[in-house]
Picture 1 (cartoon, helix red, strand yellow):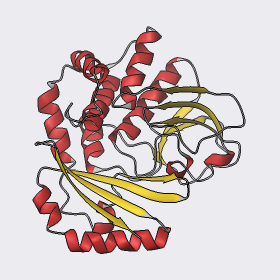
Picture 2 (tube, helix red, strand yellow):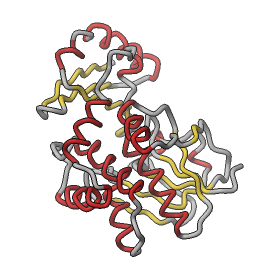
Picture 3 (spheres, one colour):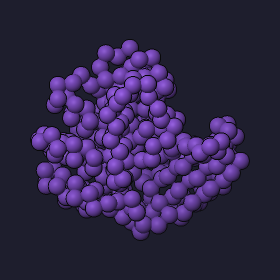
Length: 269
């Protein structure tokens, strides 16, 4: 079992999950704590763009947790989105901006959830509250996460707090948010190399309500039409996923990041 506390976001990690893990690692190390950011899946092209821009490697990949492992969760709380073995881990902290569901712990913990567009917006506030200096690297990580989750402030989940945080972080990073953000989002929309299986799992969250099990997945693109050219094979792949995982519903959202428009493929068992 790892002696250090492991920090990670959800499975099929997006930019917020990876960047917030790295930022939370820095925050806790500044407090003198022994922590390590890790990841629960492959890094997508958008996140790869951010890490390459900074010249840093992605966090270490883990697949399961040993019993009693101390962990910090960012950008998620639901156990079915987390690491294998999370039920037997010691969850010390959660920083999230999603609903709270299918979550319980044996011991008290620090839990912070806010209705903002991105986990990194909350982390920005934590740095400010602790009067902790934000270095350029962490500023870029946080603003990248905010740009990603809010689709450059076009998402309906974007709040004034997200915009304010990004404005302040861009000053520290000395970055033109619109120029950098558009390049980052475009880097994540090159879908030509992906198989249908990879496409529907790029950013997929497993959820449940009562006895209903479902998945909500999303891809960002600059051309919905190009993705829909593969509609037949995508539907076949989704049907297979429903059968193999015993799902009741699979929702696949294709979002045009330039025009703030989406098309949805939704299939039931």
